[in-house]
Image (cartoon, rainbow, N blue to C red; front, side, top):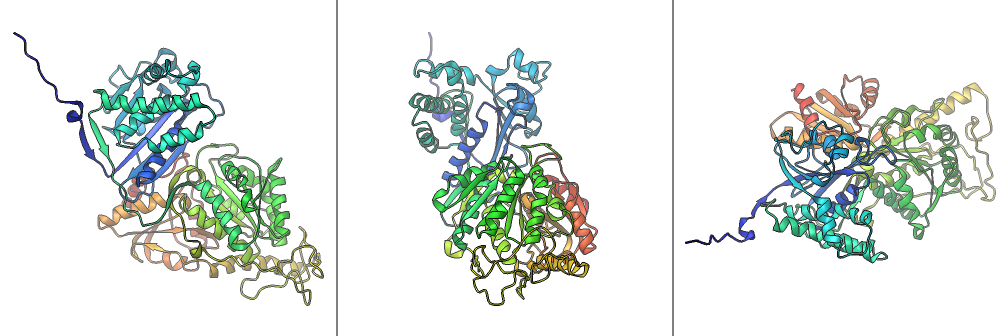
Length: 620
């Protein structure tokens, strides 16, 4: 006699677990579409209403051998039901599309974390490329993690081979969407936003569009029907301030910020640039905005780019030039010309690992001293730095405002982390944006090209060709007021001090340095640029533990805010985390005689929250 055992339906076997935040890292070969996969998950999380922060990680080599360690591409995102400021210290989930991706990233996965691997790629040839002596899926070396072994390549191929008319190679390119579908099921995400994107992106290639849609839905359905996964995870919407939001990267925000500055000032943009990682996307974004009167010039080299921007500035445009550290080195002689001629040039430096070519796709903050001091002679410029990807919008506007107010070059120091990272951005009310008044001199009576405004010490701005306002500018020292060429030693010293005093005067027209926490205490964590998220999160956690810790973040680095000395004196110890060997710390020590502690990191990766917490606790 036999009996029939009734199994509960699949739905009844699936548990649902609510999480506050999840950090996922997608990793694979540079041709596996990991950046696209991560960006689509990010967009979906943003549409759902989560707060997000991302960290794309591009391979540094062009066309690295397929399956090799240098060719690994990664994308990490942190999505949450509360405010997040970093892409997460360590991923809870790692999706590894091949052995090399596993080898490069497994050390970062938290103990007990979820590991999803594409088993089809763990063959002898790929294991050898990744320097594995044995197959890690078979030798218990992954016992510390929850491993889900999925034959993603073959499952994707099986779903497509009878439904689309594509080559095997083209069908393989869809496997990232299969993996994305699995993750959408696992974290209870809708397919709708990605389906809409695929339909728009591949509308001219119907078979490719069909294949990607099938791969996405097949991955979702596979996770839904197989016994591999038994738990759904949900992350509720974040309680963000009301408004209309969009996902934005730092480079996108920079470009849009400069366009906003153009509208606020009534002046057209001229952007002269030579393509360089990781600044190239600013050129791409601005080149699409001709409807706003934007003029972009892809120059034959860095020197031509900056000189063209100086010429545009002289003609009354917003003269912009963008690059990374190696390009700044080539531009510096021309920046000195802009200092001598006192023209409102903006230089964008999206910093990357150096020196020389260094780590072209990795982030660093090592160009601060280059921006402040990296020219011959006494050659002062204003230097500012955004704190987050979205803040690049605000600081781009600020760069233009300061450049015209003080008739001075302004350095805008972004970096690879900000440039490529993304977060939700609340669209601003245009009425709340700052004014950028620009006055061109038109009255020839009493006009002199180097007389000074009493408040700002800026010289007048006379557009060439204005009747009666003919004047000379150039790289040789100018006589005070007249602008005539002068070799007089007393005049030279006077003009050197005047140009410095003009930059120093900007401190009267920028916001005070704000403190996060108490105005005095045991430790102040001082930062600049992209360290903001990790510093603020670390300090916030320590404050919850009752620790005497505050933080302050410098967006204005030359000159410093006028209350900086007062802020520093309120604390027993100042700790400065920065992605260099202590450049801001050197400035703080020399200018304020504060024995600041340096926390350096030059690994091409941003700070983790726990790294900063550990350093602060040493001094508590």
